[in-house]
Structure formats: C-alpha cells, structure tokens
Length: 188
Image (cartoon, rainbow, N blue to C red; front, side, top):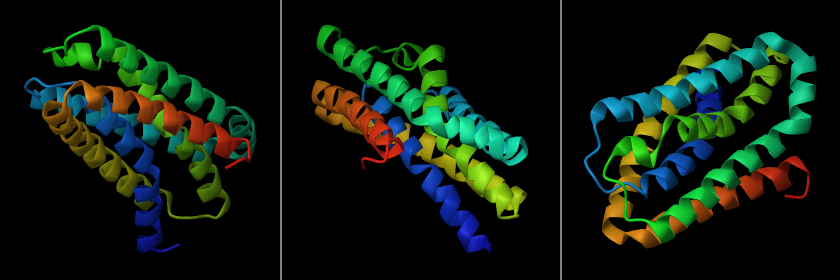
C-alpha cells in the first residue's frame, strides 16, 4: 500500500464524521469558541485513533466480534442523537452556549458512532501488513480537519436557514444511522 492509498483510506474514514459534524453544527448560531472547536476535533480524532489502533493490535477476533455489532451501535447512537436534535429544535430556541448544543455525552456518542468503521479498517490493515503509522497520521489529520470544518459549516448553514437546518441535521443523523445499519446487514 502506498501513500495515496493511505490517504484514500483516511478520507474515506472521515466522511461520516464530516456529515455528523455538519449536522451537529446546524443547531448552533452563536459564536464558536476556538477552544471548544479544537476540543470537538480532538475528541473525534482520538476516537478514530483508538478504534484504528484497537483494530490493528486487537486483530481478527476483535474485528469479527465488532463486525456483528458495530452497525447496530452506530445506528442506535446516531438515531438517538438525531431524534434528540429534531425534538429540541422544535421545542426550544437555539442555545447560545456551545456546550449546550454539543454537550460531553453527545460529543462522546457521536465520536464513538463515527469511529466504529476505523476498527474494521484497523483489522484489515493489520492483515494486509499495510503501513499503520502513515495511515494513522493521515486519518488523524483528516478527521480533525473535517470535524472542525464540518461544525463551522453546519453553524453557518444553521445561522442562515434556522430551525429548518436543525431539523434537517437531525434527519441526516437518523438517515446516516439507518444507512449504516442497512449496510451492516447487507441490505444496502
């Protein structure tokens, strides 16, 4: 595997992450503290690093077990957060405080849900004797950048289009969770 392949894998792993952070950012219309945005990017990045490493070092057995359940876990987490986001957008005014838009518990749920694929990729890379460190670095950078940029883009869309984007963001999370489940079940 060459550097281009490692970059392609890294970009592929961060696409769900980007969609989730855009959807999450739609509910925020206030100022975005850079420190909090760095925290969001770091949290998503660390979840991906941990999962890729677990897959790489945990080997085939862990990958087989996780492949049976990862799509169900991601589905449950994304649908839970999506429905919560839709419900809150219909009930409340947008939160001015960034930590209320993306509290720790939700941030951890989303980080976990979007990083489950990295576990399987880690297993596959270990079986192929692919360069672990290069892939890990590319993935970490891509996930961090897409998390940061996704939330900023979502905030701009939410600010421009209001509650419609909040509801749409929640629907995107539900749709993404459903797609992951159907894909994991071999239907899509």
